[in-house]
Length: 108
Length: 115
Image 1: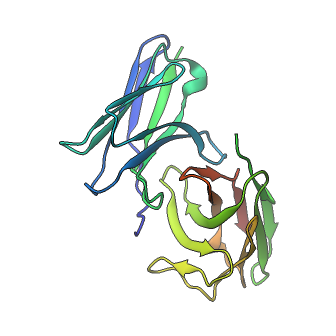
Image 2 (image 1 turned 120 degrees about the vertical axis):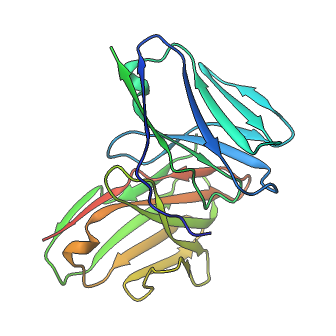
């Protein structure tokens, strides 16, 4: 698949609030999804994954929701902290294509 | 968790020189590694997919003679930017897929600046 560089939208939240970052995917056959966090000047880090036989998975302060009907994925971060400020990407099972990503900015 | 080591983290070179970037999976075997470049405030752009022991598959618009990829072992892939020019300046990132599962792990990236 061909990836295209995209300018990133920004989500600005207040410290302590919950954040919701959304991602739409195109391949209905995708059966595995991952969310990554990328801090400035660093490589992406794995946050949480979910398989298509699930619609929700929880981690530590993070929850991923999968809606296969509308091909939509979301990442919820509870009690957002300044350290959560980063760019968040979703990836499909092929690992080759990424959602454009969202820049999360946490205001103290 | 699995670790992917990428070196160097930063390189500055003169125009016309070649630069090699290494990507190693430290505690797992990776049959497939990927190379990306990223411009400021943009998403990752896949450049090529590298399979151990075979030729890399390049994305459309990526010059294979410009960006040489070698994946000689299950733990090492290298990207060589040949005859680098200022327009090659970018952040390059590698990733490796664990052969035991589908998880993909990323290197810490290499900031290339060509003067």
